[in-house]
Amino acid sequence: MRKFALTAVLVFLGGAFLPGLAGDASASISLEKCTLCHGKPEFRKLLVDGQIRDLYVTGDTLKGSVHEKKVCTDCHFDVSEIPHRTRPKRVTCTHCHFKGNKEGAPQSDNVLAYFDSVHGTAIARGNAKAPLCQDCHGSHTILKTKDAGSKVARGNVAETCGKCHMEIYAQFKGSIHGAALAKGIAEVPSCTGCHGEHRIYAHTDPKSTVFPTHVSDQCSKCHASIKIMGKFGIETEQVATYKESFHGVASQFGSRTVANCASCHGVHDIRPPDDPLSMVNPKNVPATCGKCHPGANPNFAVGKIHVDAKNKESGIIYWTATFFKWLTIGTMLALIAHIFLDMYGRTRRLRGER
Amino acid sequence: MSHADLAAGKVTRMSLLFRIQHLLLTLLLTVLAVTGFALMYHENSLAQWIIRLEGGVHNRGIVHRIAAVLLMANLVYHVFYMLLSREGKPELRELFIVRQDIDDFFQSLRYNLGAAKEYPRFGKYGYKEKFQYWGASAGIVLISVTGIMLWAEEFSMVFFPKVVLDLAIVIHGYQGLLAFLILFLWHLYNVHLHPSVFPMNPSWITGKVSAEWMREEHPLEYEKLKGKGLL
Figure 1 (tube, rainbow over the protein chains, first blue to last red):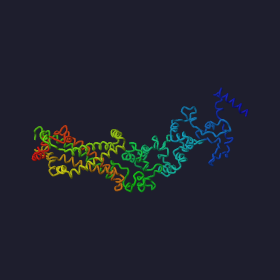
Figure 2: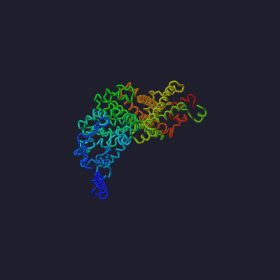
Figure 3: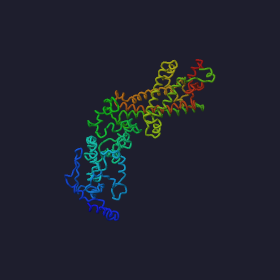
Figure 4: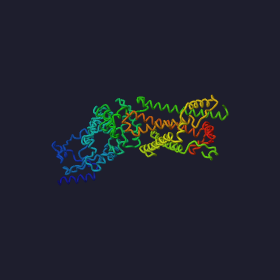
């Protein structure tokens, strides 16, 4: 123990007077010291709720991850003596990932956005279950986001979110988006496609991309794109016709109670109309409309919902609109002609012509 | 018709009750047009400004429907007044479209083009007034029916499929536009810009027109009044 204290003093002095030479040596505790205990496969802790926390770590744990050149105490920097007497705190990624850091750790404003998000504010309120960086990105096995194996890669992020949002994950897997994602279709949105990544807000927060008045804009990012929808044979006029409808106009002027895309098509459980489980399957339409329109009957399912009066395919609606258009133009021309004739006749009468 | 009027050469054309009905119609149609077109052309920035002025899209609807209810009440009152009252019954008879109106229309065309020597001689209401009156009445009925259907959309959907309501939206909007344009172009020409009345036919406020105007524009009515010794 005395020897350790002496070393500590020397290291401290060295650190103080020779920072360039002794800095690194003093700041980190070597991997071997950690694996003295953590390197034993049976090293685990039984938690109060019966769960087992695996504490087994080897020199290979970080291998292949973006942090493979780091050592334990680079992240677990509150461990200053071995064995540590208290449980190390949860790792704070902003220790390195801050703007202008000397380590060269990638940084962007996303970190700040996270602190404002529903997850970040939940943490700030003291919700221990809310996710920190490592809950989504992984802890020892972090890969780059573009890497298909990353926990936040397109193919994996739903499962990652589903660790906490289990019911929603189950719904999503059954939805058309979930099914397409499982097939590996590149265009289909996973959780983050609609909710955002670090900027996730509660759907009741006006900042949210899925706030009621933002839903149609969010869906239209893909569903109004002929380039994307054309690949799958899906119509793109749905967004435009919605925006022209009573629902769409009220939504654009700020109504939060009026139906948006999700009110009728579902949220995480969106399915194509020919799926019997789809909310917009003709059999289910009365119940879907009935959420807002009490007593909705099968009449609600008769005919097209997304109607464009300017499109010939709308049949009688198109022809009625066209009829009125020409009736109005014709009436106006006739009245203008009549007015001019009237003035012409009067002028001649004034001049005394007959 | 008072002696003072007779002395001043004035003839009553609109009684007080008709003037009130007309004024209500004017005000309510204006409110309905402003609120209605704001919704119909909601992409236009002026329309968006109007909707904000009206307190948002929800309040806009309330204003539109209050005006609509008053307009329909005005219409119902007018129908009963024309059918039952001592003043209304003869007015209604004057407004019936008869063969003569069609002949008058073609004669006025021929006259204006120089093919006929005589301009048609109108009674109290010529074909222009009758076209305006029946056109506006039919328009208001059509727009009221479609409006009520859309207002009570859940009730309507008990009986009709959605396509009928989609039709109602189209008809309601286009009918409103047609009525507005006819009123704006035709009616305002006839009562403001027409050379015989410019700058304004005062009868909608005072109820009276000059006997001279009556003799020029509605000679048959003028002669009828003269025959009764009212002029």
